[in-house]
Image (cartoon, rainbow, N blue to C red):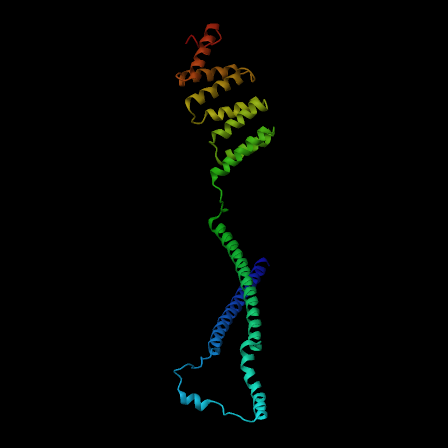
Length: 287
């Protein structure tokens, strides 16, 4: 049903485009023809000037001169009969021309029709273009097998991370964790999101078991030596204090001292092992 309605809409827009375009072209052609006719009419109305002056032949002037009338009444009657004949050309030149008035009204009407058809043609073309763009985009999605996204993956990840930070500032910690976990589903090795979840569990929610789980996941990733060492120190403190797992804490301290002795975290781990050995709390110190 939807495809049938869309087909009818396509036909209606095509018909509107053809109708408005054809009529606009017709009115434009008529306007151009009227302009050409007006130009020709104005050129035909120009009359040649009469030849006067001293160069005119004397015999022609003499032959064309009206006869001298001695009878005053006859002269008056002749003037009365010739006056209407002389008035018509003047009225045609300077008076209102009914033909010209009708032509002006016709030109104005053609301009109005041309404007209306042009607007209708533009609106129909815009609607047709919108439908074609929609169908083309849908076809492209079907061929690609996924939604076409105009936002890059890194931009979307950055926007989600910023929303999570804003949620943390507002105290919406569970919402922040949800957003960060959504990032980790697409990018499992995104260290910033994993570290932020561990910090939220550790410092905001005091959920040290979940904090330790996420710290352990961080230590499995490839991190800079200094960062890895300090994360291990923090995790060892959670094990030794909050979770009461001294053996897990001691294992981490030994790993830091063995793998990263050149870092500041490694130096701190060596000092802690020395203190444990001096107090006799490190069973492996004698080995």
